[in-house]
Length: 296
Image 1 (cartoon, helix red, strand yellow):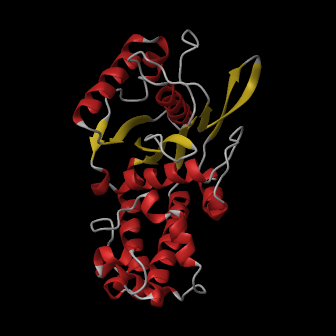
Image 2 (image 1 turned 30 degrees about the horizontal axis):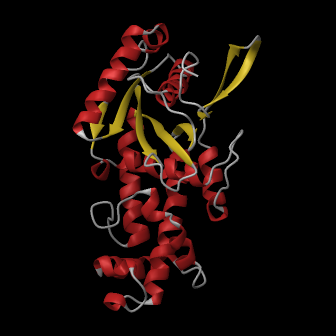
């Protein structure tokens, strides 16, 4: 038995996102296929068809942008079967479905149904994660945090690996973990592989964690890998909706209920730190400065 950690990012384009988030979901290998099948079935149930292979990727930005909530509130909540039928009709009309009522023959009912289906689907998706004992991990970086110039593994990665290591260490029988990333541009993949190799081979902390975490990551295409898409949605919700600890930037109120479900997926552990035997450590780490202490 082992665990896979699927990772994706949100807000790293330094755009409007209040936080940069590196987020991952940890799932036991024997549960992975069952969860994947359940997600595919949910696509059919909520949208009347599989959507992750079409125009509507399962990404936080596409499912949960503010416009989705505005459209969803145009009309009262629809009955699920009717909602799925109208959502499918909306999707089948293609790109015009993202326009305004009347564009490409898209009706107000269809646009509303699709928006309601998106929100309901994400809510169900997070409930599925809880049912399959998925744990969420995240490094949350303030958008104004200073960044290091040296070509070393960034602090947000090392903090997230630390939390994943603690989770594996606490698991019954001390389980092993594999790290799976959304594929980056090829040169960026090589840079990350090199940085991880140096971290796990040349630092004492990394060497200790390599006992449970396989140091070389796997890369997959996000639009083909369901678990990466789940990680993307969770990263988006953390950036825009979750507020824990010292996160002070405004959150979107319309994401509050979904954000609460994400916080319930966190992992809690204790370690000896700062002279405290049972120092509480959560799987979400807030980072205000990505530089090492030496560089600050």
